[in-house]
Length: 167
Image (cartoon, rainbow, N blue to C red):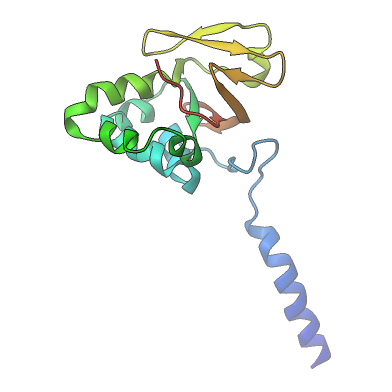
């Protein structure tokens, strides 16, 4: 009986470790086997607003394509910082063009890892407008803080930001 109790206790202690992902320095957003940018984002509940916006904008196929892309991904909390009604308004079909402009402002063509950002002061987005990069005290993209970096995707990389950046 004691031996069986010890085995059950050991199993209960070890089981959670078997399911823990290899999160490295990714702020808990990484995963062992990377899917596409959309799949990685969809696999994390912190990005549900972003994923809904990408779907409403019709950008799923683009962000599932070969890329590579670098996405500065705002969390749900970042979207909540926007004025009340902003997200709901952007998700309306008649505002699709504006939503696409906002989302593509968060995407840079190519795979830009955190180590590559040092020395950069700006980057061109697929929106056509540049974002500013400040590495003097952490990393800031326009007015957003980068809170997690180098989250691997099969077609690029995701960096998590705490504020939605607007073109």
